[in-house]
Image 1: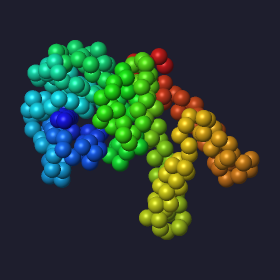
Image 2: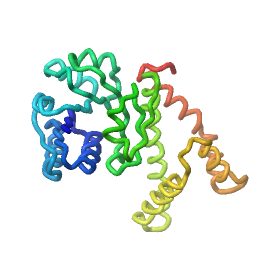
Image 3: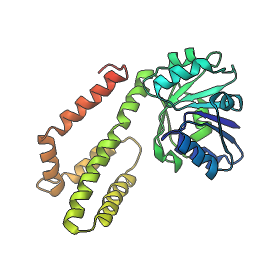
Image 4: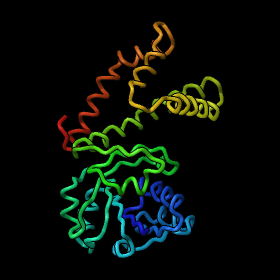
Length: 255
């Protein structure tokens, strides 16, 4: 199996690490961009090789597109794709039909949404349209969620943005705790462990487990209840909804 990456950034790198770990006999080819990341991968992983974009295509049967949309629009017309290329896009802001128009005579591209912890596994992967290629590449240790419409996969793209808002709250709480204990190292360890442990222990069966977790934390007059009331009175829920609607408009969804 030969897998190429057009684009070698913060999402491509953990995907490469995941594939190299699980398919040590596969050839993995990455473009020079970004130079420091592609050279790091080639230096650290025996079956990773880097070169120009056309060289990556020529050596690959499966191609992952991990570029900014405008870069893809500029680069793809200069490349010679083959009809037997299988492809996966992890790009935002560019639709599937436009990708197909740019990569002819290749066809059958699908879209999925990895996040950096795919390197370790356990990453949920929405895919549109349903394609066995995603299961072949990642399904042994990452749950694949086929979706039936492109707007649905775009909604999943928007939903991933919640991660930054979760982390910024953990950052702020960690700083607050460290200021009061005098130990910022342990404060960060504590907050990261608290969040990872609580969410990690939650069943992932879709049976209203988030609602159940919220109920357990919402004892009237308790610490969680008091802080949540303060945050909600400051517009937490309304601002989240407005932010998601902005992302929906950016991704050409019905907001």
